[in-house]
Length: 149
Image 1: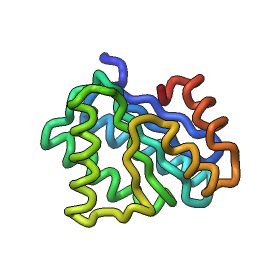
Image 2: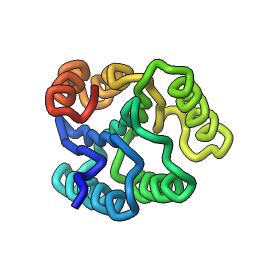
Image 3: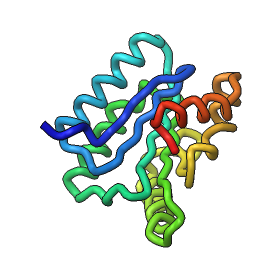
Image 4: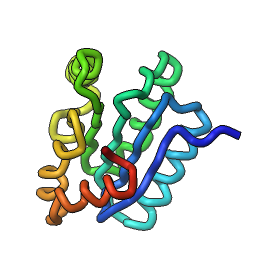
């Protein structure tokens, strides 16, 4: 059996999710169940920080559909979502622009709910404001646990 292509962890009401490759529908369902369990334990909306590693392949259309459905289904569990697309190459910059553009064009989420970042540090200030904690400390702890770079 192959190792999962994702890592999850919860730190101070922040659900961290890292994808190192495009997930299978089964992995997406497993992650969604982990989100539900974390939400039930916190009993209030959390913050989601989801990241794609710089070497992760771009999901195909079916994988994107499953990921989009998961995000829609999980919306009520999160007060805000931060999408981190790691990498410094042109393709990574384009991916960030495309994701941001799709969110604007489809009006799927407003900019107060979902934001796109180059690295997890971009989410730290938002985590601090929303939760009243040291956002940098939360992100650094997530780094030490391997759920963000």
